[in-house]
Image (cartoon, rainbow, N blue to C red):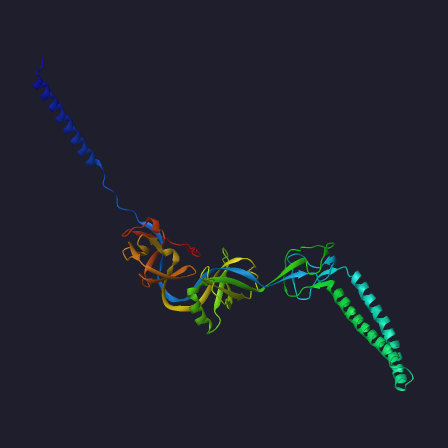
Amino acid sequence: MFSQSHIHRVRVTLALAVLLGALTLGCNSRATVPKAAGAPTVPVTVAQVVQKTIPVEVHAIGNVEAYSTVSVKAQVEGTIEKAYFKEGQDVKQDDLLFTIDARPFKATLQQAEANLARDQAQLENAAAQAERYAKLYKDGIVSKDQYDTFRTNADALAASVRADQAAIEKARIDLDYCTIRSPMEGRTGSLLFHPGNVVKSNDTILVVINQISPIYVSFSVPEQSLAEIRRHIASGGLPVSATVPEDTQRPSEGTLTFVDNSVDTSTGTIRLKGTFPNRDRRLWPGQFVNAALRLSTQANAVVVPSQAIQTGQNGFFAYVVKSDMSAELRPIVPGNQVGGETVVEKGLRPGDTVVTDGQLMLFPGAKVEVKKVPAGTQTTPS
């Protein structure tokens, strides 16, 4: 039998042995961990900060409007005989569009002409009698009542002749209305009534014609820009450009021609219109475009590609590649944006090299490797 003191000493000895073994194992395990390898270089694309003259512009979302719109209606009631155009066809002024059954209007004209011939014959007879009775009354042969009767009859027939002439003119106008021509040059829309349909006078729209060359682009800008716009427009027309989304061609160019006479109090904006020649038909009524109103130019502006500018918790910044190929985080103050470029008011100097792609892997002091961009490759502005 072992005493209690002996058992206690054995337990203490075992505990010390286990603790010593754990410490030894921990030291060995730490000694066998390899040191961390050096951080790899980050592949990036870069661009140079340049100094140049850029335009000062106000940007807005614009809507394309037809220069003028005409809803063609019938001026007389009748049956459409024929349509002389196809839907979506370009037409010129006075081009024939529709004809309406003219037979009832021809009959009305013939009836009016017949009435005129009858009344003119009666007028000639009444005028001769009135002249004869005027001489007889002067000689005292007939009474004044008899003379007045013949003179009144002649005057009434003269009025009937004038009414017949007016009826003939009206019948001719209605007959002309049976031929519907284009009131302007433009492009036709959908054909709303086809041959065989009966149309009413000034009630039914047959087709809508839009003039699209030239064309308007309407857009609204904040009222804070109104004073500057009025100052610049006083010295001459301001240029306006319109870019169709997803269109890689150059923006369409126009001129500011309209400034609304009041500010929209619900939105705090002022409505403007630019007129565009639109000879290439790139702008279409109802289309949304990106409009840019050029107010002036800014000389010696420090400009970088817009994708080089990043946003962090402390504001805007850009990564600058130093001479030792390390990245430096540079806080900046961006200004106007024109196309795919942004003016930097503070933080960069002409000649600096900024990172335009690959910023997600960068941190201050990271080593970079400049990737070669294939010739002809264009970087899409962010």
